[in-house]
Image 1: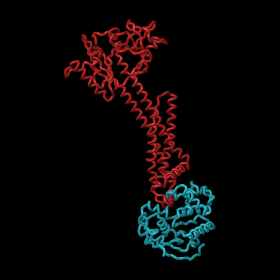
Image 2: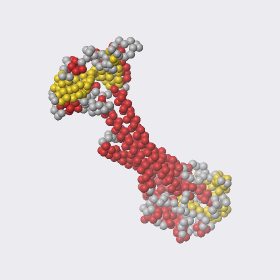
Image 3: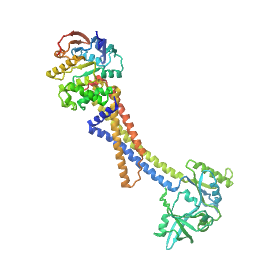
Image 4: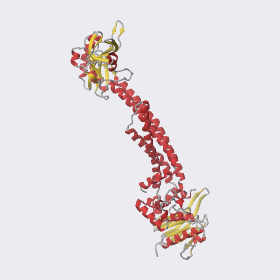
Length: 233
Length: 407
C-alpha cells in the first residue's frame, strides 16, 4: 500500500464574518493516493472551494491536520507554503490566469523563476512542456493571440513545468465550450496515466465523470465518496 | 527569485503604461533637475565670493594706532603716534605670524606729463605684497633696501596706469607725487573689485620711508599709522591677535585696567561672513529644490499604489505559483527604484544642461560638482526605496486567495 500523497484529518476552517464565526469546513477526513484522479463536487457554499484553497496551500486550516507528501503543512509559515506551491503543486484555474504581457514561454517558465533556475534551464523546460502539449509554435506569442482552449493548455503547461506531484484544477473547463472541455479533460486523463495525481473541482457531472473517484461536499462535510470506475478517457 | 529576471520584469511593467511611467518620472526629473541647478548656482555664488576674498589676501588683520586729542579735537583712529616700526618688527618675531607690513596710506594727486589722477598712495614694505598675494605684472617690486634708503620708486596699479599713462608702458617713466619725482619700476597684477566695491587696481605702492618723508609727512619719526599682519591660518587667527595685543600692551607699558592705545581689526572676518552668507543661501536653495524631489517621490508612491491595486490579480497568480512575499516586495520595490533612477538620470542631464545654458546666456558663475550629482543620485535612490516601500509591502501582504478572486 503506497503512502497517500494527501491525507487530511478532521480538517476545519472557519471565517470571521459580521454575523460571527462561520464554519465553512467542519472536520473533513480524506486520503488521496498517488496516481489518483479525483473530482470534488458540490453546490456553491458546500465548502469545496475552501477545501481546495487548503489543499493548494493558499490558506491554513483552523483545525485538523493536512499531510502533503507525509509532511504536516497545517502550521507551516507563509514562505514554506509558497515553496510547496512552487515545487510540489501545480495550479490550473477556471480563468486560465496567464499574465497578459508575457509571452507564453515566459508564462510557462514563471514558476521556475521563483524556484531560482537559470535562464537557459527555464527556457529549455518551458519549451519542452509547450512542445509536449502541442503549443511549441506559439511559444513567443502573447496569451491574447490564442484561443481559450489553447490558453488553458498553456496554463496546464505552467502547472507542469516544475514536475509537481499533484495538480489542482479549479473548474478548469468553466470558461470553455463542450468540445474544448472534452479536449482539456482528455489531456488531464493523459497526464494522470503518466502518474500525476489530479484533484479537480467541478460542478458538472459529465466533467466529473472523467475522474475515477468522486467526492461530494455539502455544508462543510463530505457526503459521498465513490469510485465511478469510469474507464480512462 | 533572482534579481536579473526581476529587472527585466520591472522594465516590462514600466513599458506597459508608458505615458504614466513618463509622467511619474517627470516628478523626479524636475526634482533632481531643480536640485542640480540650484546647487550649481549656489556653489557658483560661493566660488565668486571666494575669488574676491582670495584677491584681498587671507587671514589678515590690522593694528591701527590710537587716537590722540589736541586742544579738545580728537583725531580719530590711527591719528596718534602710538605705533612705530619697532612694534612691527616685534610682531614679526611672534609665532603664527607670517607677514608684517607697516603701512601709511592716503589719497594724493599724481602727475605725468599733461595727465593727472588722484589715487590711493600706500607707503609700505615689501611684505605687504606677500601678505596681500599681490603679483607684479611687469617690471619688478622694490626691496627692503629701497625702504631703508627711502628711494623714490613706485609700483602702479592697472587702473592708475591706464589713467595716467594711457597706452604707454609706465615702467621706467617718472611721475610726480606731491611735487616729488618717482620712478615707476613695476605694474601690479590686476585684483579687480574688493568686497565693498573699491577698485583695488586704482592704487600706487611706494616704500614706507619715502611715503612718510616725502608724501604724507609725519610729526613723529618712526611712527606708523597701521600695521598689517597675516596670520598662519584661519584657525590660529584669534590666538595670534591675542598674542599681538598682549605684546603691544607690554611694549607700550600699559597697566592693567588702562585701555589699549591701539585698535585691532580682523579683515578676514567680514569676508568670512560674506562667504557664510552665500553658503547659507546655497543651502537654502538646495533645500527648496529638495521639496520638489519630495513631491516627485510622493508621485511615485501614488502611482505604485495604483499599480498594486490594478495588478492585484497578477500578484495572486504569482503567489499561487510560488512567489514568496519577499519576491513580490522586491518586484514592486525594484519598479519604484527604477522609475526613480531613470528620472534622476534624466533630471541630472536636464539640470546640467540648464545650468550650462544659464552660464552661457547670463554669464552667471555656475559650479557643477561631482558631489552634487552624487548627492542628487543618492537622494533619488532613497526616495525611490522610501516611497516604493509602502506600496510594495502592501502588494506583498495581499492574501493570495483574495488576490486571485479580484475583479
